[in-house]
Structures are given as structure tokens and as C-alpha cells.
Amino acid sequence: MGLATTRHCDRILVGRFPDMQSLREVLSHHPFVGDLDAQFVEMLISCGTSVRFERNEYLARQGEPANEFYLIEEGEVLLETHAPHGSMLIDTLGPGDALGWSWLVAPHCWHFDARAAEPVNAVALDGRCVRTKCELNHELGYELLKRFSILLAHRVETTRDKVSGLHGVPVG
Image (cartoon, rainbow, N blue to C red):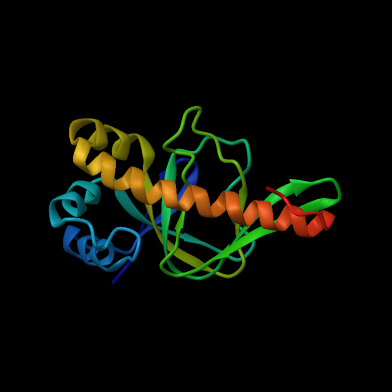
């Protein structure tokens, strides 16, 4: 199967899905959305596309517009933040993880850098498309809000743990 490439949010997208059935299959088995009601998975299909990032390529840069979120299929992503003497590793994400909650919350800007530690294959879901579908179907919106709230809470906890470890002082 050949790979089709297109531009999306200034990133090269590699179309590994020859048809909607292939994307449906990936979404149905991804731990972040796979247990959603089938009708919700169907709604998300039109918002998704396949992406690939090479080693050290950025999926997201702190402060830049967050127009999408990613469901990681293969590879490892380093979640980093700016620190006084360089970058500080916050978390490492891999297959089955979701990256990005900033697409959901205005002003829709990334709060961390996300860099591929090795080649990464993922599904990119367009934030504007998903927000529109959530406005049209509040049940979908509520299901995704619950999932992203857990993701956001995890990021806060992980960041707090890194910062408290850096300074040797308990936080909270």
C-alpha cells in the first residue's frame, strides 16, 4: 500500500488508512477512545488522519496553537517543559496514550513540548472538528470531557511530582 501525504496544521500527514474502515479499526482498538459507544467512534472518524513523526521531530511546541490531539499507536513521545537550564522531562508517552488536551480549552495553545524520542505513528484528531461534533452531540462531548479531565489531572500530578522532586520540597 502506498502512502499518501497531505499538509495539516503545518505538519506532514501520512495517510496509512486506505479507507474509513481502517481508521475505524484503529480508533475502535485505541485504549483512549476504543470503549466509546460505536456511534461516537463513527463521529470521530471524519476528524482523524494518520500522522508520522521522525525521531526528535516535535508533535507540539509550548505556546503554539493546539489544533489537534494525538492517539499514539507506535513509538515514544517525550513531554517536556521549559526550565531555567533547558528542557525538563515531564512524562513519556507511548502506544495507547493520548497527547493533548489544549485543543479543548481556549485559547487552544500547547502547554508543553512533545517530541518524538523515536519514530511515532499516531492518529491526529482535528480539534475544531471534534469541538463542533461535541457541540452537536453533548453526549459525545461529555464522554470526551471525562476522558480529557482524567488526562489533564494526570499531567498536573506528573508535573507536580517532577517539580517537587527538583526542589526536594513536597507540593500540596
